Length: 392
Ligand SMILES: [Mg+2]
Image 1 (cartoon, helix red, strand yellow):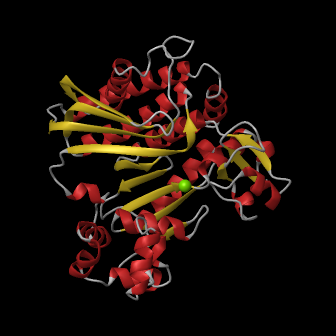
Image 2 (cartoon, rainbow, N blue to C red):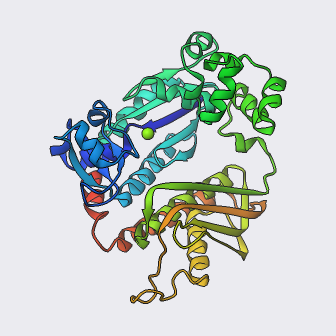
Image 3 (tube, rainbow, N blue to C red):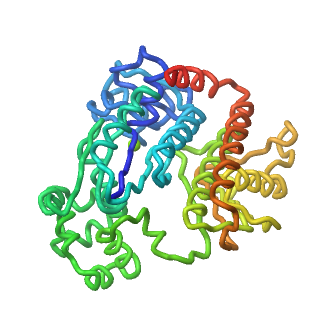
C-alpha cells in the first residue's frame, strides 16, 4: 500500500503556525510585499471559504473578504519545513519519496496498518510543525493521491478493493491527477464522467485515445505498490524534477533553495532505483531573458542531493548566470518562473546502502546550515526557531 501525505494549505498553514495571531483567520499569502499589487500565492482554509484561491489577484481576493489578513510569501520557510517533514517521515523506516514540496509518498508494503500509521503521522506533523496533513491510502500512488484529496483538511481516506467502486463512482474524473481540461473534455464526450468510469476502461481503450500516456494512465490506476508512472521504466535514461514557482523571482537565495530541494528530490529518486549519475542538467525558465539550459558531466557519479545541488551551482557559475551584469558583482540572477534539475548518464550505484545513508545524514546537516547561512535577510531564521521549538 501507498500512503500519500499531503499538507493542508501548506504555505498559509506555516504562516499561521509561526504567527498564532493569524490562526483561524482568513489569510492570503501574496507573492509580493505590496498587499494591493500582487497575486494570491496561497490561501488559508478560512480564506478559501470566501472563494479565494491561488493565482487570483489580491485586489479581487480582498473584495471577496476585505478583512483577510495578508503576508508576503517566504519560500525559504516552506522549503525548509518540507525538508524537515521529509526527514521526519523517513524515520518510520519505509521508503519515502517527494511528490511535490508539500506532498510525500510512503510505500508501507502489505503488512502495516495504513490507517493507524496515517493517524500517527498526522499527529506527529501537528505536534512538530503545528500544521495539519491529509492522508490517502491505496494500492498505488495515483489512487492514494486521489484519496488524500477526499477528506481534506486533516482527513484520512482509504481506497480498498472493497470500497473502490463505491468511492471512485462518486469522484469526477477531472479530480484525478493528470486529467487536465482537454483530457476531461475528451473523456466526457466518450461518456467517461467519474474516476470509476475511467478505472473500468481497458488499457487498449486508453491507448487509442491518449497514446503512450494512456498506457501509463492505465498502469498507474491498476498497478500495486508503485510510486509514480516514471518508475515503470526500469532503465530510465535520465531522472528529473521541475517546479513552476507561483511567480517569477530573482531572489538568488530562494532560487538556490528551490534548486536545492529539486536536487534532493532527484537524488532521492536515483537512490530509490540504486542509480548514480555523472551528468547534471539545469533548466531555468526566464520569461524576460529567455530560457536557460546547460549541463555538465562530472567524473564522480553521485546520487546525493546535496552534491547534485553543488553541481547545479557550478553550472550556474560557469554559464554567466553569476557574471556581474548588475552593479553588484557575482549576483546576477534573471527573473525565474520555473526550474528543473535532471540527472543523466546513469549507472548502478556501488555505494553500500548504510554508508550512503550515513553520508547523507552528514551532508544534510551541512546543507541545512548552509541554506540557513545563505538567507542573509533573516527570513528563514525565525521560521526555523519557531518551528523547531515545538520539536522539544
Ligand atoms: Mg497540499
